[in-house]
Length: 577
Image (cartoon, rainbow, N blue to C red; front, side):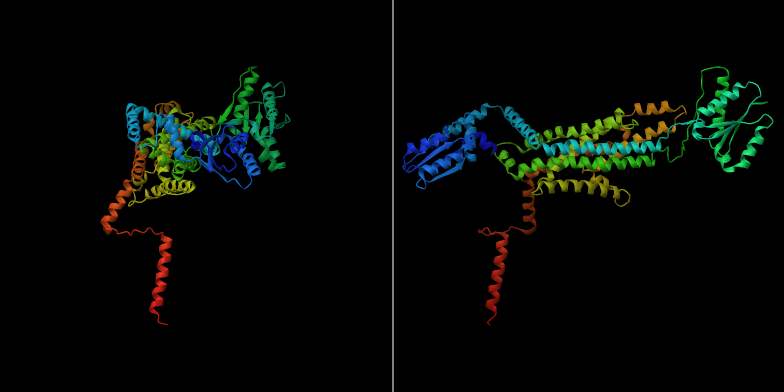
């Protein structure tokens, strides 16, 4: 309809002229002023009506019915594709007549004109047309474009990075600041000197500032007797509340509870700061603890966190990108079902040019979800695990190569079904199934070759690349965590800064990803050129010999019914009763 609207001659009204040609044409021009007569005979007249004035047709038909009644017969027909091609030839300067004498001249002029036009410019014109058509199709189908290309990858990567941040937060324990506020509401006993005791006063002020209380014991009682008496009066309160104590009468002693895990460093820190305050200094000592349980499992490259991250990347994001790539089934499938692709091939376009230009256009569209995904990584990577240049570069390279291979696989799937949803499902199921079979097969000795056989499906090497890149990133991150405070942080920084794509050890997977688009394009071109059909015909000839076919073309259902009827007649003839 688009081509007919642009290049067609509009609509043609065939109407009888029993009431006179002039009267009929006057009535038509009153409602459609741009109408013109194409042909007039004794009884019929053909009038051209422009397509842009189609909204005036109902009033025109009412006027014709009211003025001429049932005495005039008329019919309306739309322009056909022959008119479109004639109009295109006219715009290109090809003059065509139906005179048989002029036909050889027309053909010769057309041949000479095409010969003067360079082949490169003709190919470039087709290239521009295919590219523009693909982008316009995406523009007019903007709802599916926004969902598959924009919203789906952003949402999947956001979920992935949120899970990665949670996993890293569980493994990265912050420094523990140690002061008496850690045991809020505790009680401290103080045995101070009879005269001015600035050390004890500073200690008491720190107890109060931490949210605890203190009690000064009498001068005739020592600190040990006071503690024993407190335990005797209320043992539960003594075990839970008595964390630190101070005796500054003769020899300065800091006392701490053996039940409170952090009481010893806390009382040591309080005594140190009390001495500083006694000297009227503004400095302060802070005490921190590093409660890391550094075991071989936590600080190795095979940690549980790495496994969680790999599953996170493969499950929500990897599957989402697989759905994104299956979106590119829709356009070639629509062109094939509507026979529009066949029309373009029949008008001189080469199948290789058609598929290469479509692939270029689709890859440029595919770059959008890749770029959006990496932006989400940069904005949400709280622990800088994936924000290094080498990791971002590795992810970009892997995703782009995956897109090239899987888009061509989607093109191949578009040949197999009449609905694009079935083709999309096949593309997804084949990819996921190949990944599962390849992974399971790698665990058994007899099926160790499975990964190499299924690597031609782009989703399989993508999963492996994700696993290796994430494992490397987790190992580098754990290097910083596990060597904190040991002086080896510089070594971890050099390990990260000097890394390249080869550090991920994904060379084999990259080769498979790079080879996949050529393999699938080769299969597609074989289908378009009919090579597979020819091979099947040769194989049938070899297996069954020459197959004799009747001159009558019979539908399969009709043939089945015919066999039933013939069988029933045979039974009646054989049964004398």
